[in-house]
Image (cartoon, rainbow over all chains, first blue to last red; front, side):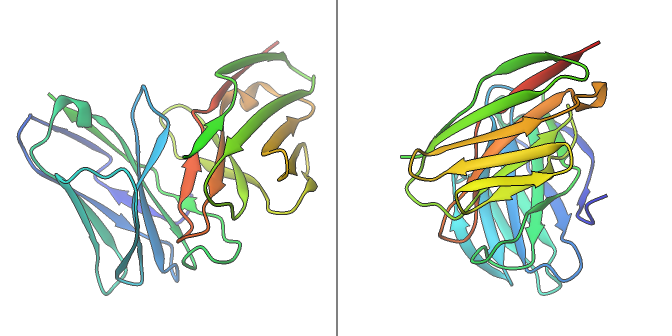
Length: 115
Length: 110
């Protein structure tokens, strides 16, 4: 158990819908990272927040957005869902913003299926 | 650009030693990580290298050559439970995001 929690564990929805994935980092960790893992691609970085502020952006679609709240939990919002958005979505946390050595601890993931 | 290459799959025998290679070309570098991932589960941290050389941790060792853009993960005394995907990831120097390779699927046979 990494100490990172994600809800829900599974999500099945239809094309065109909107969903929210939630992540609670390990106690004391300030950075939250979101990654997408689909069958034909490896883990792809989406976005990072550090202490409430967006720190880095990766291959995140405009239909996707995220935020980090004052209690440091984060939400990833996916809208106008397409079949290709079906994937495992992982959240990871680390104590700092990435300047010094800190491994990222991954949550169990949310499996999203878009029908 | 960002490019991380590792073999797609490897097979080894229980009790043997296996080396998984990773080559990278990234615009920034702030350390190289190896993660283990069982199907459908979260990646779990195995090792970290930021300086050239070998880091040993029990049955697992990892090597880095920054000038060659090369790393390997060495697994000794293989066990059946080591069957998993092994992910090589480079941390960039802006914010700390990880750039992952496609992963190497390792099958350990009796």
